[in-house]
Image (cartoon, rainbow, N blue to C red; front, top):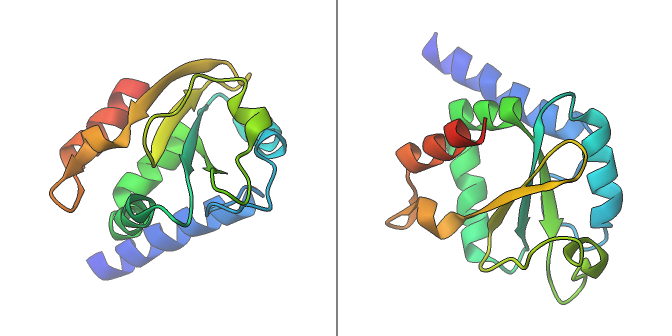
Length: 147
């Protein structure tokens, strides 16, 4: 029964991310400002969590694995935030987006915005690491303090 519940949570989280029209990976062909407008349209009282990174970023891949292996966390993340992946790479620096907000230091990086695109704060994801991955305790603490 636990396996079925886990599978349903994963499917729910994945379909929620795919159905909203936002990228679920760092796509250099996407315009971050356009995606941010979509995020604000669907926020419905939630904050926006812009996760800045790129395909070149090994810790971005590690974070994605963390999300997939921790569906309870991922579900909580999506209940608290509209999750928006923002690409930063040689192929697309999304300069127009980043001109509006304080500079990001390190990748991946969490940028928190309200549903009106107002900057609320950042979280260095290095502070959430544990060994070669992410700390469950630190990741949940991030969500809880962001509510």
